[in-house]
Image (cartoon, rainbow, N blue to C red; front, side):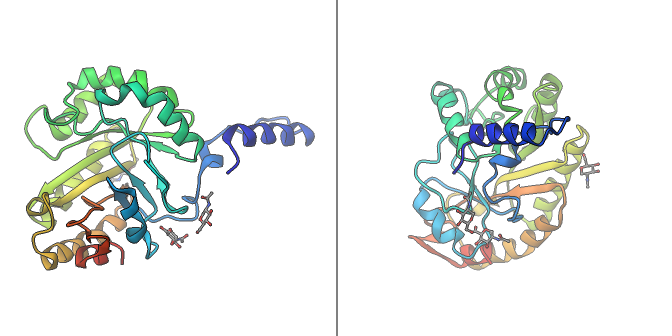
Length: 274
Ligand SMILES: *[C@@H]1O[C@H](CO)[C@@H](O)[C@H](O)[C@H]1NC(C)=O
Ligand SMILES: *[C@@H]1O[C@H](CO)[C@@H](O)[C@H](O)[C@H]1NC(C)=O
Ligand SMILES: *[C@@H]1O[C@H](CO)[C@@H](O)[C@H](O)[C@H]1NC(C)=O
């Protein structure tokens, strides 16, 4: 596809040729792949990129991420790739990888993965704010920036309370949206947590909430009972689609024993893609 620089240059030439006096603001629109025509919020969280094609086969998946800054292969052409800076372990290759992703059409960047968990990105809110400002904020003119993804823990200093501390330290980080994860037992509990995330985001003027991992707790290590999972998804997917401020979500996850069995959609996967 045409690079951003090429389009930018072409745009400038066209503008001067037509002698339009006021320069139009440069937006990330020109970099978009198909997201302007494809408004599905549903995504694929994957480790094995080969499994995204079966998940995208019915046309309901518009985006994908892999907890990393590179996609590791090729996604179906109508699935947008979203790079993520997982945590401190990935600072080294970040600039090269994110530049590649942005010039290939990515228009969002995801922040750290569960910084509120010691087993994951493990950062205090103020540490994370410093790193965010250093590594992610510089891209704010070229992509929309999503917050670190917090857990649904209600322990003080974790979950949405971690996010609130983070926002007080990162008010000039250029953040456009809040990312959250949820594991729990019922659709009601899920909807209540997501609604709380939406109102927390709105209190910072943010109208985008991304639910980048969610599943019943019993399915965190693989789908236990496909009928139960399918029924959970049948309840929450239309609800998520109806929440204006929930702009993207991805079930945990696009993998064997989760939405697929081997490389084929199972009952949960069929519900997720219907
Ligand atoms: C958009 O999607 C179509 C298929 O629906 C594909 O042929 C085309 O290459 C995509 N455009 C870009 C820029 O990826
Ligand atoms: C959305 O993307 C899917 C592929 O993930 C594609 O098959 C479908 O046709 C697209 N929908 C629209 C409205 O472009
Ligand atoms: C959605 O976001 C906008 C902008 O922050 C806010 O005004 C609105 O109240 C939010 N909606 C809900 C349901 O919180």
